[in-house]
Length: 518
Image (tube, rainbow, N blue to C red; front, side, top):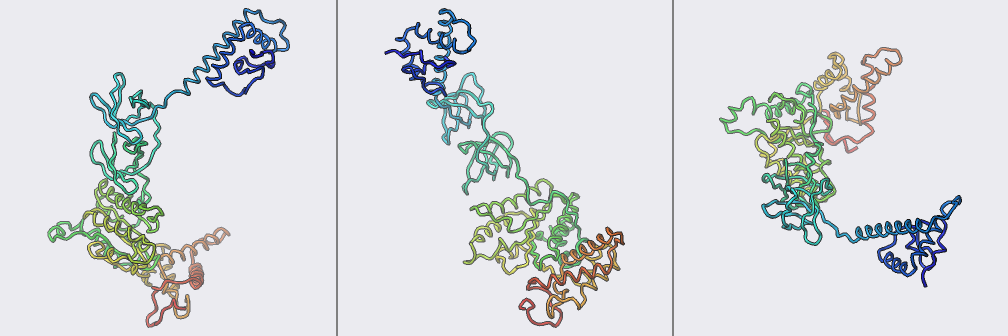
C-alpha cells in the first residue's frame, strides 16, 4: 500500500518529505541516512507524481492562513520536483562526506630528486614526489590513508606536540634531545642552538617549532649594585674571593708562568644573615668590572631546594641547566659568571643509607658539571650553615679550593655596617655600643652580641627608621635618634629570646657550655 501524504502537518517543510512513512512523520531533527533516502525514493515511484503534487500543494496552502488560492498543478509540480532534487543532492553530499577516507598528516623528513621521505605516526615512509606541488623539508603534508601519497601541503599546520630541550646541535639538519632520560636524534630546519626549547611533531622525529631559550630563573638581569666596600667586615672572606677573582686577571702572566690555575670553587659557611649572599653579589660586580662590562646576568643565584623536583630526572636536569647558563654567559660576554648556590646542604648532602636517596643522583650530576667547567667557565660559590652535612666529594680540593668561615660581626664590623645604613658615623658608633651592651641577653649567660648578624643590624635600622617616620607623620622630627635605635635593639633582643638560636652562636670569652641546651 503506497504511503498516505494527506496527513502531513500544516507548515511541514517539504525538505523532510522523504521522511514520511505510512502517513506518520519520522524524526524531524536531522537528515535521513543514505539508505533511508534510497528506500523512500523507491516507494515514491509507486505513489505517483499526482499524489506527490497534491501533498505538496496541500502544504503550500497551509503555510499561510491568508493564502487565497491553491497554486496550479504545473507550479506545484515544478516546485516539488525542484525541492526533491535539492534534497537528494544534499543527501548525496552528506553521504560523500561520511564515506570520505581520512587523510593523515605527515612531516617531510627528506626531499630527493624522485621521492620524498615522510614521517607518518612514527614511521618513515618513502612516497612518490608530486609533479605540481612544491614540498620542502619539515613541511606538514596531507597524505592518502591507502597509498600514503602526498595530496597537498598543509598551509596552517597544527603546532601542538611534545616540548623538549635541545642538548646538542649535531649539524645543520640534526640535533640531539633527551626524552624520558634517553637521548634521541631529531631533524630540524632553520636556526637551532643548544638549550632551545622545541616542539616535536606527532612522531617525535622532526622539530616543528622553536620556542627559544627558556626564561632564566637564576640570573640577575640587572647589575647587583654591590661592591666590596658595601660588605661590612668579613676581611678574610673578601681577601680570599679577591684572590679567586681579581688575581688571575690582573696577574695573568704570573699565573701562566707558574702554571697556576684560577680557583674553581669557594665554600662559604657560617651563620645565616652574615653576608654570604652579599659576598657573592660583590664578586659578580668585581668580575664584570675587571672585564669592562655590567654585572647584569653575571650573578647566578640558586637556592638548593629550588633544584629539587618530584619527577624522576628533573632535579638533575635543573643542575645541568644551571651550569649551562654559566657556560652560555661565558660564550656571550667573554668572562665567567659567579654561580652562587645557597643552602647547598639541601641537595649536596653526604651520600649514604639515610634520607630519600636524592643525593645519590644529584651529587654525581653536580660533580660531573663541576668537572666539566673549564678554567674560565664560572666561579662556583657554595653557601651553607651546615658544612658538616656536605658530601666529602663536593668540598675536596680541585673542586672547592677554599673554605671560608663567614663569622658573626664584631663590634668594629657592626660600626661599619651601621655607618653604611645610617650614613652617620657618630650615630653608628653609639648604635654598635648599644647593641653590644651587656644588659641585653637572649638567655642567661648569653648576651645578644653572641647572636648578632648583619641581617639583625639591618633589621634594627629598619625598625628605628619606622619609628622616625611615624613621628614625622605626627608632625615631629623625622631623624633617627639614639632612642629609636635603643628601643629597636630592645625589641630585637626580646624576640630573639623567644626563639631557638643556632648552635654556633658566638659565646662570650670564658663562657663554657652549650647555650642551646637550655
